[in-house]
Length: 324
Ligand SMILES: [Zn+2]
Image (cartoon, rainbow, N blue to C red; front, side, top):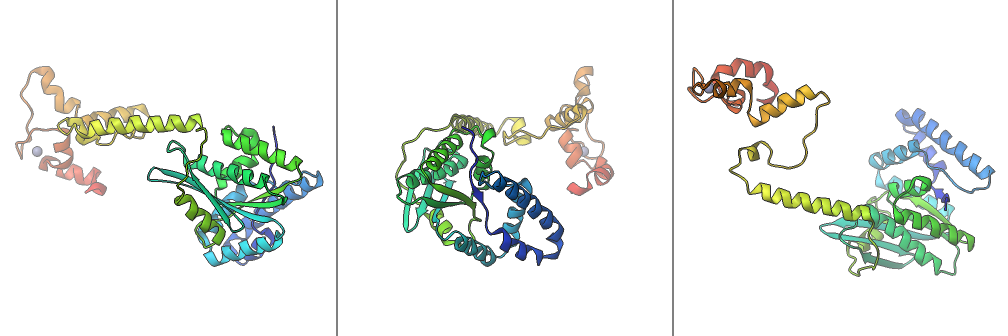
């Protein structure tokens, strides 16, 4: 079951030339490329024919995507195509938006797309697109293919298949192994999205406009997440109607607040939020009348003290200045 996939990357040699012209990156890039190249050499020595993706390289590629002009990324891509001109190019893309989950695959001039169950995560869609591409490849007479996908996390997962738990990842690994036995040569290549690489744009477009439902099983984790999301939304809808509940103003959204690592801080903050403090509630224990401010004659609630009361103007300026 354990397999490693051939993972290729956009034109590293050309990349090195491009990167080294950017002074602040040079040291970082040099180390990154060295790490990558040494692994590549090691692996080719033991005939695995596999390229490893180091974490540093992933960060590097993301950095490049965010700081590089699209035209440069396009050039890198076209150079890669020249290097692998005898491999049929297969582009894949997945999308999830407004209740529409779909994926698109383009192989040469043909394009294929399907919608998936609304329970599916975008990650599942990204896995499904690779799985579907392999299915198309398996029925081809040709043997060499390069799958271009823009999901780095899917490629990372395939690269570290030993730690994979997603059922479709495991299925992809099995399929690749079977296809290799049949003589297929399949490489995977990450491509940046939305930078004008035509195949990627086309796959993105067909994924968004997919209309044919694909029969498939939904991973348990996706169902669980959808159910949790549904229950949360139902709870929020009910809470949204509780406008007369004094706690509604304090916490209109049911999203969990961050927790302080020191419990004492959390206790104080909670007391301030709900307004139940020794200072504002002690009169109840002693049976006294409600304490009023000396200057404004208003009831001394936490909210009044912190935001309005003139008695505390100077303290407010001292301690809460950034908020006012
Ligand atoms: Zn006051």
